[in-house]
Length: 386
Ligand SMILES: *[C@@H]1O[C@H](CO)[C@@H](O)[C@H](O)[C@H]1NC(C)=O
Ligand SMILES: *[C@@H]1O[C@H](CO)[C@@H](O)[C@H](O)[C@H]1NC(C)=O
Ligand SMILES: [Zn+2]
Image 1 (cartoon, rainbow, N blue to C red):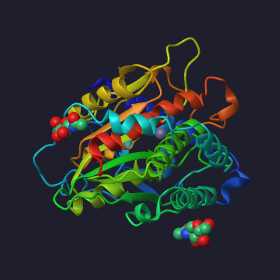
Image 2: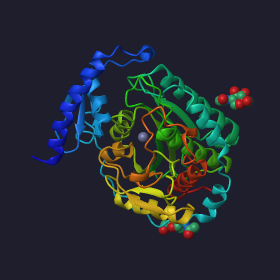
Image 3: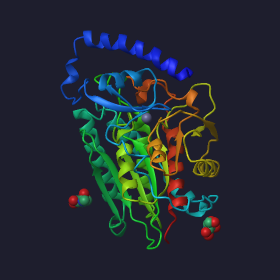
């Protein structure tokens, strides 16, 4: 019997005990405003195990116990029947567009991220099955629209589309697309973050400042700076803000849609938690090296060396730990960069303490380094049209 199975069995017992505690408690008043049925059945997939049906309540509990899994209820064929078409695998030559990238990096600012994150964390929770999670998504969409309208030239705006990718729950994913100029290269480059937040117990407040408000505003600032530079990619460039990180529901749905439509995604870069510098540690960028594409990850390390003002550290975060995993499952190359080594990352996440003002370890300057990485990823892989 594998150790993980033993742990899982033990966890199930702990889980059963604590679920009883949940059931005996009067349900919090905040339950109005949520569309969450704790008895609904979900199909989850833990690493190395056959998919299993559990209740939503049990799923929440397993997550609280630290288990990582895909919720595949709505995407059972992803990675099996549905997979990206086999193409010639992209190679990632060393980055060399410094002349184009560096001037854009100089225009990045902490001002937008500060304002945007203050607003984004003011929603009681951005839980994907809550009314406030729907409202925060609507706000994000309007902010993207405002930035696009206020920053991009009229001719650049003609190349940009944004849309809500609809899900069966309340909060939708958001997809912004800058059409590439190439008529022969159908490759797509994706930069992503998840917009939702959750408390361990979903009905409680979840400001989600770091997880993943930070990644959401980090890539939004990169997007703003690219538009301000009148950047026009050769390959199509997309920015994604996923709904429902818990079980990776939103990103699986989007990745499945892309795979089913044979979209030629050559690279996906995930930003999940970009703000925290643990006291007493060296400021660095964590490059995740497990469950990622090794070639794209090596390229990502080269980008850090070339464009960020802090070094990287290699680290691991386990199975299905963020949305890049959905793209990998769909057969696409993906990479994931986080605020530090996994061990030194913010321990306030999934609680009411995941706030901007909880500690001076929460740093907008640190976050800005990750906007640099997102800009570099876009220009180096998307190419540029003069
Ligand atoms: C960068 O490298 C690519 C791929 O090797 C090459 O096609 C391109 O001309 C190079 N660009 C510059 C500015 O050196
Ligand atoms: C863009 O901004 C202008 C001026 O503020 C406004 O009139 C217009 O409706 C906006 N367009 C979009 C698509 O939001
Ligand atoms: Zn996250």
